[in-house]
Image 1 (cartoon, rainbow, N blue to C red):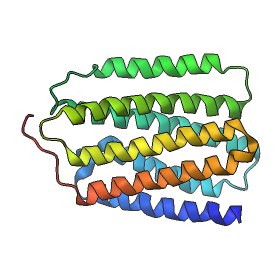
Image 2: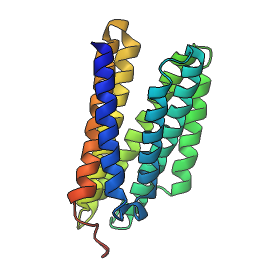
Image 3: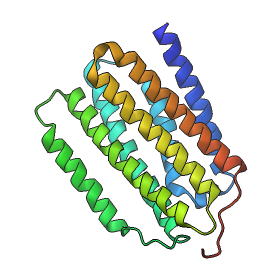
Image 4: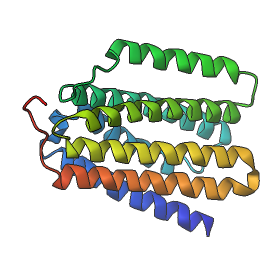
Length: 217
């Protein structure tokens, strides 16, 4: 049963991922290059992950956490790029990009130092949770910029909402799995479901939402 759910999630995730990529290839990839890079990386990593299910645990763990780090970095690039775009249409002045990048690097280093000494899986789970929390905070900054804009960018709001849903689900899922082994399946289902919903929202935004306004707010 669990294996059937897992492969069903893989199938739905790959389908939604391809829909996002095809929508971006209609021209939006020029405006959202980091979203395009994230979607492509997610597609490739999912295919490789499926192929590595029979691999030894050490190989699987090394691949899984390398993949998580790469995706976490791309998520930061996505949300910072969103903030840059929203700032052009907002009366608020956000933090400069280099400060956001520096803060992300310091948070990663601090989280690594705090959780050092735990097992690899526990350590990386906690680091990933900390990074996702920081990405959610950046997403809230993005929402404050979008709300302050005189002409809200509906496409960017949907993209931001999808990302925020995915990150929040990942945080809650990690916390549930860390809290109790009996909640492991629930935490995993929550993380997978919100990840799929996030991809669906991205597809709807890129497929139907109007192009962003170019006039200043």
